[in-house]
Length: 344
Image 1 (cartoon, rainbow, N blue to C red):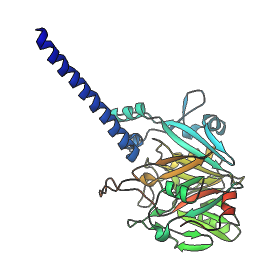
Image 2 (cartoon, one colour; image 1 turned 30 degrees about the vertical axis):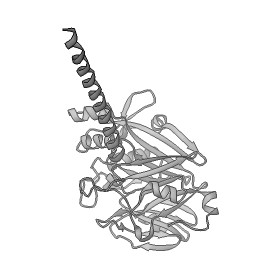
Image 3 (cartoon, rainbow, N blue to C red; image 1 turned 180 degrees about the vertical axis):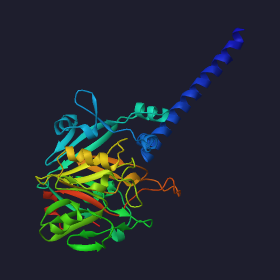
Image 4 (cartoon, one colour; image 1 turned 180 degrees about the horizontal axis):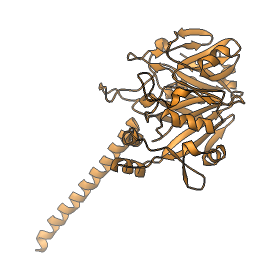
């Protein structure tokens, strides 16, 4: 009996080692998939994309309140300061929706849903469009590094071939034509950056230096456009819960970005309500959904958010590589003034 026990123990030990190795390999595989596809965030998106439960924000004391019922003061207390540098502040909000299915409950248990709020003082930064020659597809990380910028984010929507839809102006030269249906604009006139509707683009004084066109615009002079609450159409996915990127400006000229973070998916009304409670005066949406990506560099440390795969071309439409042709970047004013050549 004793002689037969040793081989059995060896077999059991070997089995446990194999099981341990498989568990490690499985964990590495999950981490790799999460790195490429933002798996945790995608889990929330898939679970809640058809949800009609109201979006709630976690307040300072740990209680929750619907976005539509928040006061400006409550919003200020709900924001968690993450980091700041000269002229730029990064804060976050923690969100949730009522979980009504097992998939939603699992996603809510595994993922803390967040929205990033980035506020930039244009006195310290130069805003501009950024793209490669021929509008070759690129990433926010590449634009951040190429331009030596502090912030980079997707701008124009793109057509199936990857070319930008809508106006692109860079250093005073028009590089792409206007798309008539689009109503939202980023632009720089007389060195001042703006985000808002077409009417603002036409009214603002000064020589046009930079511009990109998006859709839709959301508000002007604190007034939200009525179509924001309308059902989705061919050109407007207003009530669809997905990754959102709102860009706006306050009355003091500061630029504010309200951006889906991990699991922080929203519809248009919800991201607009957040902007209202942040005292945003004019606002528009930038390209969102799976295309959303942005990069932020503070104190020399860079952080990157991608809604989906930007790394590997699998040759599959379902797993399509998400890269965009045009980005908006904010460069430190000193670096921008010292640059003699804009990188391609």
